[in-house]
Figure 1 (cartoon, rainbow, N blue to C red):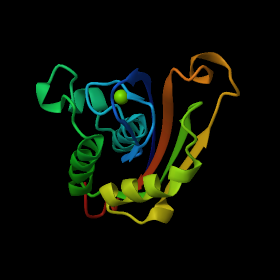
Figure 2: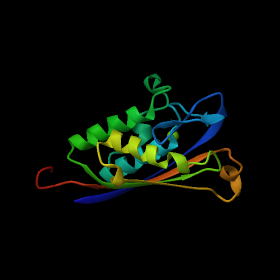
Figure 3: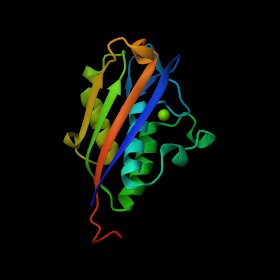
Length: 163
Ligand code: MG
C-alpha cells in the first residue's frame, strides 16, 4: 500500500540563536525562533510522514506546552516519529522538501541537509530531495523575516504483513 502525506511549517528569524535547518547547523547571523530548535524543514517533514501514515500531527506528538521538548533537536523528534512509523511497518519510498527563504543562500547546504535527513530516516540520500527557492522579494519571506518549508512524503507498507 502506498500513502502520500504533506506538511508545511513556518518559523520567524530571531537574533541570538543558532540556525538549524534540515538537520544541520548553518552559519548565519540569525536563527529560527521556536519551542524546539525551530527547524522548519524537519517540522514540515514530520507532518508529511504523520500525514501519510494517518497518525496525527507534530503538535499532538510534541506539544509546545511540554517542557521536555523545549530547545529539543528536531532531528531527535524526527527519529522518534520515524521509529514509531517504522515499527508500524511503514517504509520510505521518497520524501521531497521545498524551503522558501530570502536568506541564507541554501545551495551549499542542500547536500548535507539531504544526508542528515536520510541518516535520521535510515534511508538513502537519493530518496531525500530538497529544493530551495525565494519569493523574489515578495511578502514577509521576501523581506527575510523567516523560513517556510513544505514537504511531501510517499510511504509504503506491505499490508499482507501489517493489518
Ligand atoms: Mg515548527
